[in-house]
Image (cartoon, rainbow over all chains, first blue to last red; front, side, top):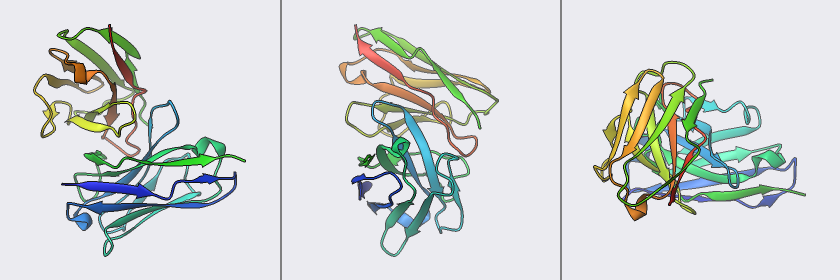
Length: 122
Length: 107
C-alpha cells in the first residue's frame, strides 16, 4: 500500500524558514517523480514544485521560485521542501504527491499524503 | 501558463441523479486532463487520467470525455459518497494547473 506521510508544518513568522518532509513507503521511491501541492484554507489546489526520480530536474511555480527548494533522498525514501522568505500567502496545507512516471513530463498526482499545515503569521 | 476553468462552481443534486461537470482549458491540451475528488478534511483522490481513463478502484459510474480544450466529468447515478469537490487538472505542461473546483452538494 502506498503511503505518504508529511511532517514539519508549524506556525512561522513572515520572513522565516521551514523544511517540510515526506516519508514514502509501499512503492519503489526512486522510480518516480514527486510533487508538492498546496491548498490555502478554504481554497483550491495549487501545484508548488516537482522533482524527477533522480533529483536531476526540478520545477517550481512562479509564486515560490527563488524561495522554495525541493529535494529528495532516495536512500531514505524521503522528499523535502525547504521554504525560505515565507509570506502570509504561503499559509496552506502542503501535500506530498506521487507522480506515476519517473520524469513527470505530464504531471499527474496518483497518490497523496494527508498534508501538513504551514501557517505564516506574526 | 495554461488556465483551467470549471463550471459550475457549485451544484446541487439528488442521489440517483446524472451529473456533468465541465472543464475548459485556455489552450489545446490534447487529452492531458485529469479529474480529482476531494472530500472535506481529506486529500484529493485521482479519479480519471488522460481525459477518459478510470483510475484503478474508481467506480464505473464515473466517466470522463473530451479533448483539445473542452472536457467533461460525468457521474451516471449519484451515490451519497460522491458529494465532494471535484477538480480538473491539466497534465499537458508544467505547472500542472488546476481548475477552481466544483462543489457537489446534496439537494
